[in-house]
Image (cartoon, rainbow, N blue to C red; front, top):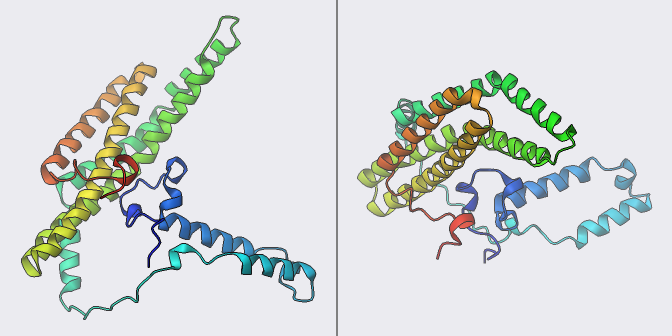
Length: 265
C-alpha cells in the first residue's frame, strides 16, 4: 500500500522552490532527490569505508542496513506498458508546435527575455540604492538599512526565480489543455477530464508565479524609482498574461494546491 506520508502528484504542481516549501517531507520527488544525494555521498566517501578489511567499512555497512528503505520505493505497482500508437509522435509534434505558437506562450517568453534584460540593465540603479543603504547604516541616526537590504534581495530573488518558471509551466498547461480536448475526442471524456485537471494545476502555478512576481515588481517600483517605466511595462505584461490564462484555462484559478489550500479531499 502506498505511504500516506506522500501527497500524490504534489511535485507536478509546484514552483520547484524547495528551500521555501513546507511540504518537502511529503513530496516523493524531493525525497527521491535526497536519497540520490545520500547515495552519492556514500559513493564518494573515504575509500577506507569501502575496504572490507577495514573496521570503518563494517560501521558504514551497519548504518546502511539499519536505514529503512526509502518510502518512495514502497507501494509502486508494476507499470503496465501500453500498446504502441503509430500516430503518437505525429500528434505530439503537432501539439508541441501549436503550444509554441500560442499567443500566451509567446507572451510568457517575451516577459522572460525582458526580465532577464532588466536584471542586467538595472544593475547601476540597484547599486545606487545599495550605496544609499550603506550611507544610511553609517549614519548615527537610526536606520532600517539592514532590513531594507534583505527585502530587496528577496524581491530580486522572487523576480529571478519566477521569470524562468512561467514559460515552461504555462506551456505545460497549454499542452495539457490541447491534450485534454484531443483525448476527449479520440478516447474518452473521463480521461480528457483527467488531462484537463492536470492542465489546470499547471495553470494555477503560473497564476501563483504571476501574483508573486507582480507583488515583487510593485515594491521594486517604489524602491528603484529610476526604473519605474521599465517596471510598469513588466506589470502590464504580467497583467495581460494573467487575463489570458483566465480565458484559456478558466479552471486554473480554482484548482486546489496542497501547499496553499490544504490537501485535496
